[in-house]
Length: 308
Image (cartoon, rainbow, N blue to C red; front, side):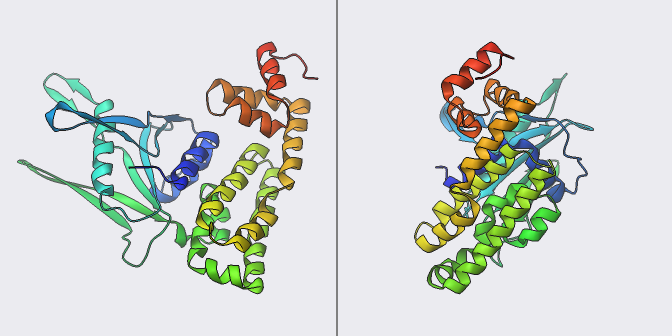
């Protein structure tokens, strides 16, 4: 199965802003995580054993462990379109995750399936609120549920009230059926621009209050632009209108802000950590800080020496 641009955005958000997934987990599974818990990501590549001894590589969207208070494993997938094979893939992924962490004691193999869920970017009246996998054995039947999160159920105010910032880049899906109308009507397009202007203002306020940092804010804006670019590819007025209030030249100023904060407050060290952990490339980090790749590499090599 090939990745979509939306899968790529989903994974980018997880890699660059992992803490944003915790409120999503709270919403789906009714947990009470504070947002400060440690997240340990599991390998997203699995090799499924097929008939004849062949192995087939599968890639999950998101599998991780939240460490507190008791470690719990979660598996979340992003679906942009209906897919009849989804449940089969979920079972394959979940079974492999369970096997990877299974324990054998004596003649007993104990496996624990992860808490799994799916985010539907598109849905209709037939889309269920949860799906089920039924396991039948000679000793009986076991059913485990996979809850469904629907992007269209969350208006923008609710996303901010529930701290579901992870879903902000996908918000344009709510308007997908009206993109032609927005594209042809200046009045309707202005309403959409005002909505995205409000999103931008909300992100700015969260950044000023230090609920999120500049890096997270810029990532959310950048990823919103990438989703918009693909979903509204045939609607030039919509693309240009939303981008005019969400990004563009303003990002250049934000990058300078990040750089100034990095130099004066030690924020560059944050990017050094991201580099060392493999969560961001040198090119992307330098772009965010508005400095050259050579200067950033030199700063990383020399540690605490002052960057000129």
